[in-house]
Length: 587
Image (spheres, one colour):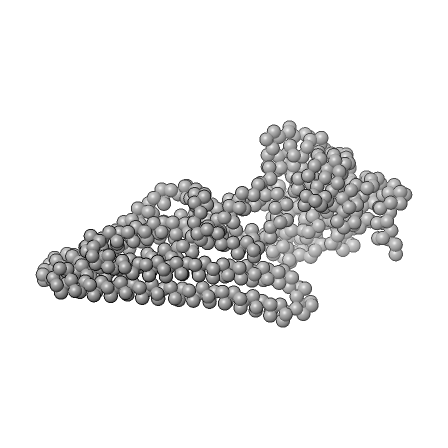
């Protein structure tokens, strides 16, 4: 997660972001309306209780009308039950709405992430993207469920209390309101300081998360090089910084809440002093004074809540800005505006003057042109950084070329629906990714249209069936995260079976045999020779021994296509390929 990004605080309220956020409430608008109605009735019940207390004291207790007092007590109890019921439904509805909005938003983020081009993930750390779908969405849920509706309720109660107190006795009400400047000053001090302390907390937890992720992923290196004590000391420093930042936050809360209590006690003292004088003089009843005491206690609770909700609103605005920035990232075009009529399977690949850059001023491929005929087996070789992997990624449109055209069966790949293109082209990557799930799931990736006998046959074709059968539950064996309970060679074989089970028109292998032992490589080579027959195959390998029997070879050097020909032709030319060959076999 980017630490610099966490330093951005943003506005406490942004109308543009709020309007966009409220669109997520639109499918549940009637539930929101119901929650607001229930909240209003709950607030009215809360306002009614001190008024009933006043009536009980002035009308029944002072006149000793016990029968009326019993009836009023029953009414008071009924209002309490109503308030409890309204609070229950209001809490249930707002939390339910918040959870549904979280569900919708996370689905939208995940769906959007799947449609983003690969270049986006090159520039954005995984931790940051996970944070968007978890922490930031949770922050928005807190605002939508505990902020928007309850904020309305706090304001309703606050203005309701002000009106009722002015109606009861405007002189006493105005005198009580003289403490409001103190409350506003305390709230402003609290908001400013807590805002800054929360920024420090977010920044320091980001540092801890980053350091934890780095150390857990590199634990083998940490242990091999005896870095445990040094890394612990660094973590202790980061953890202590986080502790200090959070203690600072606790300090401001510890000051603010007692301060509000002191100010509310000051208001209570004013009510008792002035109200007592008026009662003694006979111009005010005891019931009114008691009701004022109860209203003043209720008056300061929404003010405390509003100060809390200011910080919640601020965090929500920052989270929503980050989420919407992610959602506004342009998606890769899945279906072109004018898709071409799909040609029959063949596997002909042609590059016409293709160039590509990850960064504008650093071209990785420069004016690449070649043609691979249907069913041909072609190898791509070159030194590290020559652009081999980039070239094959362009075939599958994992990246889009900066200029030039790539054609499959005579049709520009940009005119293919992306799903159709990727059904025709399958890749076996150098870095094998194994999902949590069964062996069967990892071969057919949950595609139930592929029969089980085809899964088994694909595994047999790549000689993976034998080791799968020896697993505790065969094809139903659960694989752990990233396939940690398999060897590197077994994962390579499994990924090869995965590509073959989908029967691709074009098969691409990026260092597919780089991590298997000699015996496994021989088995895999035997399988690929049989399976690549009649299928266009593109192979990348540093080990030149694996590609001597291909139809022809492309030699890349610093992003340029420098040589083309068969193994024998390229050796006879004594160029770049000849030098690569000598480097591998000079001993």
